[in-house]
Amino acid sequence: MNLLSVVWNVSPIIFSLGSLEIRWYGVLYALAFIVSYWLLKKLFAKEGVDVSYLDKLALYVFFAVIIGARLGHCLFYEPKYYLNHIVEMILPIKHTVEGWKFSGYQGLASHGGAIGILIAIILYSRNTKIPYMWVIERLVVAICFAGVCIRTGNLMNSEIYGEATSLPWGFIFIQDHNPIPSHPTQLYEALSYLIIGLILYYIITKKEKRHQGLVFGIFLTAVFGVRILIEFLKNDQESWEADMFLNMGQILSLPFVIAGIVLIIISIKRDIGKTLDKKLLTKQIK
Image 1 (cartoon, rainbow, N blue to C red):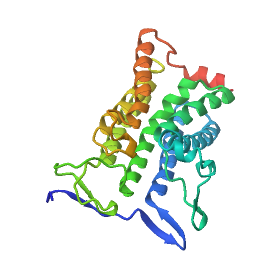
Image 2 (cartoon, rainbow, N blue to C red):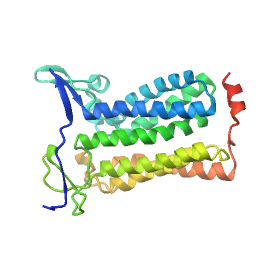
Image 3 (cartoon, rainbow, N blue to C red):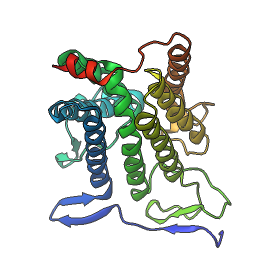
């Protein structure tokens, strides 16, 4: 055993109230929405956009993330099971030998959540008349910091970690009964999202003269590019991924990376969607 390893033995449960368990993952997932709302409120205020538009956006994104992430996990990773257990796909319950029991949504896929958000913003933009790219370029900044919270939640759950490593920062996940030091890929992703988020926040707040679409393109390329790279260090989430060169997470990330690169090139070469003047935006919203 590597004596320099980090022994990680944090319980995923903060406390229990009878049969109700309050878990770190749930708290951090909720914190992701709180942090996102707070950051977007600052960005909306800076642009002079009424906060009521943010409240509506929060509802769209909340339901898009939950529905998209849940359906994404069920259809991308366990379609055979969930297509035969539709009720368990939709509701947070599971059928056991003792009958139906509340289980929570055990399985949320980030790629499904991303698809859900992209669709939700189309509907939101049509409803509010706020340009799609204006909304999405501010939203992705918040999503980076939300990703930090969610990956920290994965760490608290001792889940979705990497393969064995001899590096001094390898984690021994006691709660998962794994005595071998492993790559803490949850921290790798969290740190990556934090850095990307800070860079995008700087561009949004400091670089007023920029090509509309550039921030979104950078987000897609950087976030999903990092995901592809870190996946090479992760253990497979499903047994059927063992013989795949690229696992499901990497395959689902590729279209986003390609779309990001294309968007960056188009936004620069064709000068599409120049920075929207604040007065024009305010007039358009009214």
